[in-house]
Length: 429
Image (tube, rainbow, N blue to C red; front, side, top):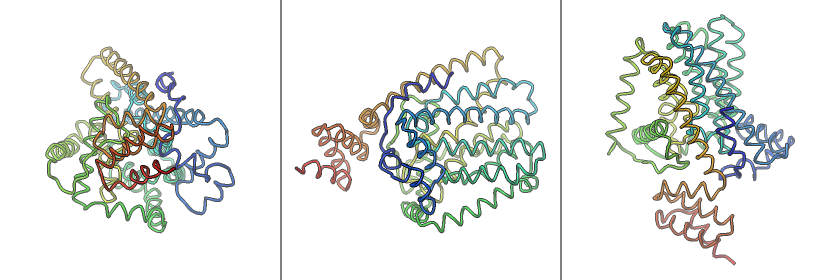
């Protein structure tokens, strides 16, 4: 019910931006035969399969939105079950019985997830998260039941499926290590249980290196910045994402973040990183849920993109997978410090506030013009967002408004070839 309240108004959203490239104008997802023909080349076959099934259903954008909402609710259920498994491994289990439900409610309502749910092609993150969290849950249950076939077959199969949705699922094996340590395990037992997943990771790494599409993407990413510069950029992105998670009142699909090649002006991000790392190690025994949450966030943000920089510094949809343990740690701490009735009232209040912000954020996706007008208001000095707004105006046949935005983009970045080309085509008869 909560999910329906939060995302009902997203059903009227239209195809946006990347949706055209990967769905509307991409014939490889327009029929069964086209999808089968594409299996021998290209990337993300399971994601494309989901797009193809939506496309051939003939339900249009609403069909895509319905599936995205269903995936989000399934992810919320997985978060609930994972929270149950985590709590069951803690000495304070008796006091934490309500934690899983409260965490799941906050997860459903948090507006930072709208980019992965309401933005149709954000499905790449939400669907990958579905198989990823399912793999963690199967592992968490199998380690108690000593189920060898789950560990040797089902978890690796879910891992491969997640990789076939989005390659950032490569973090699953180290994520399983974090789970093991947070739940009282050790290196020896962890590696004995996890060697099939590490084997899959090795094979996947070889595949990515031999795949021309992946290799070219990795090459361009590696050449975009130095290692030290990339650390600085990723720290800036982490600070931005954590700020958006804590105060999701100014969400932005294309934030104007620093792409510095050094640590100049990075005092705050460096201090935050230092505090996070210190807390992560100091609280391993006393507050394992905090250590787990901090390590999980660092794994899915800094560590994932340290050697291979993102062309976009940070996207809110990263927090769909990265942020749920933060909710777990928050609710556990509230439960341990406050009376149960106070915790319930406080969480219900937070859920209502977050749900309201989610509904408001969904409205931004109601049209491409609305999306990029909102983005321009929040990133006024970024040439790309002005170019995107200009193109949205072109599609709506608002030529003078488009001309203004293309000109502004070129004023901010005279080397913006896309804006220059769009302006030139606008002047053609």
